[in-house]
Amino acid sequence: MSLLVVGSVAYDALESPYGKVERTLGGAATYFSVSASFFTHVNLVGIVGDDFDPKDEAILRKRSIDIEGLERKEGKCFFWAGRYSENLNERVTLVTDLNVFAEFKPRLPEKYRNSEFVFLANIAPDLQSDVLHQVKGTPKLVAMDTMNYWIERTNADLRETLGHVDILMINDSETRQLSSEHNLLRAAKHIFKMGPSTLVVKRGEYGAMLVDKNGVFSVPAFPLEEPHDPTGAGDSFAGGFMGYLAGAGSTSDASLRRAMVYGSVLGSFTVERFGLERLLKLKKSEIHARARHFSKLTQFKL
Amino acid sequence: MSLLVVGSVAYDALESPYGKVERTLGGAATYFSVSASFFTHVNLVGIVGDDFDPKDEAILRKRSIDIEGLERKEGKCFFWAGRYSENLNERVTLVTDLNVFAEFKPRLPEKYRNSEFVFLANIAPDLQSDVLHQVKGTPKLVAMDTMNYWIERTNADLRETLGHVDILMINDSETRQLSSEHNLLRAAKHIFKMGPSTLVVKRGEYGAMLVDKNGVFSVPAFPLEEPHDPTGAGDSFAGGFMGYLAGAGSTSDASLRRAMVYGSVLGSFTVERFGLERLLKLKKSEIHARARHFSKLTQFKL
Image 1 (tube, one colour):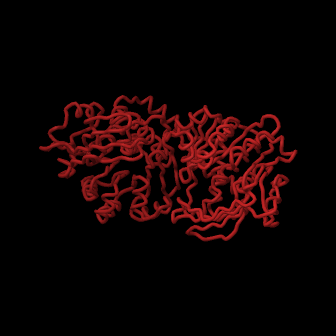
Image 2: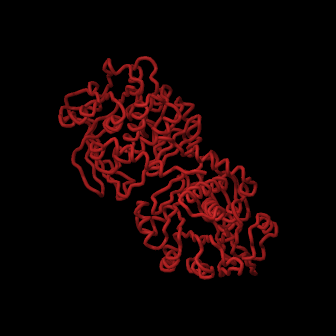
Image 3: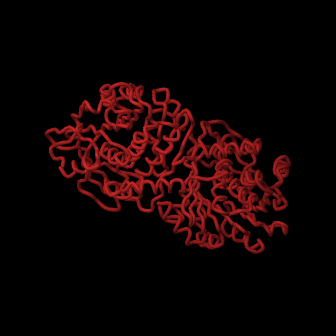
């Protein structure tokens, strides 16, 4: 089924103990789309400047990611530069130039408006709401990301958006901040009162956890000896998760579990190399092999 | 098969946002023995003072924990007092009175010397070695715990002990400290060179991870809405883990996976109430029900 994503398309400068890249295609919607494109057709809504490289456009097109919704504007693309600590568990933002992204007003092309699966990447909550108003009818599944900035500064807008969303997909510190609860089960109950019926908590090196009315489902992070660059891990997770569900056209409990695994698979590949490097070389057979590896990692018989 | 544990038997004063207890039976060997006793007969080696309460002795005896190896000495029992932070993720030690434990020289009763499964709880590494010398022949499985204190101060002794141990069972910060590696896979490889063929990393609210030549196996922590007191969680985990293996008489990959689950089950019950309170009321049927719940928490079909 059709999958819509709205979010940032950017250039990143990245630095970690494993290397450095000066300028590479990034942004939440990019990682999301590339990851999801292994499972389904993706409709991308974002904004880029006139420095958007035709080679990068080709990368997206080649993967059957529809970019009719990728607005071109005079000016420069969103640019982010960051440096990771020795153990990759901390990062410093060196540059955030919003550029054309500061004027982003998502407009859905007509053919996107029937999307059945919708992912609202991390943008201002009022823009996320605006996107939902443009979607016709009630999508089968709406998921969203957010961050501390919006939780702190636009809490009322965020609450409004949350009222129209099925799945909230955030990290543990955001979960705790939004709910004012340290315990994740109690945090989930708080968040369910705000609208979402499902909470997916991304926990970095500790994996991910889904909480809904059926209970809790946990997936560990894939153990890697030498992750190079965590950038885009969470958005790749979201792309694998939503891509799998849209491809399967299902939101059953069994599908959600598999989606958690495929999300973890895509996130784990992303961090193996810098930027999109690993994802762009990835084969479907590698995705399925790693998903089976997740079975080995977690399965037991009583 | 017979399971031997050597470690502390103590009295604890505990304080958390959920309450306070002035003096309750604790110590690593106690939590371990009580947890393991659900699966197998336990031989306990430890030391207590003349203030050891006959009621507490009865608690151990009643569970078919053999305490012939529990030495009585003039003086007082090891006493520990601690206070947990609001979210239970930090603790302050208020009192550590080693008392008779300072003079602990483990002596195995003759009938303990054929133990096939051995757990060396967190005590000085030279004492751990000394215990292994008293065991006849080669046990089927030897596991040990340790802590930052021994890693820092008696590293040579610790290395000597590690050379004779199959499973090292420690937390993540200890794993990183011992191996000088942040990445747990690389840390495991370092530790394998020291002797153990298996590393079990206890990760608190993030569960536990086993690494051996077959790869990695992960179990999440059981999600609890209101854990009361984390004291003894790690030792209960170890008791469930080793108790299950000794009861099954097996160290196969499938058994190790089940042992990880039963360890997690016992650890999760312990933290529900203060001290041993929950374990002493626990029924076998509850253990098996929670183990099945762990399946629900982690299992998926591709």
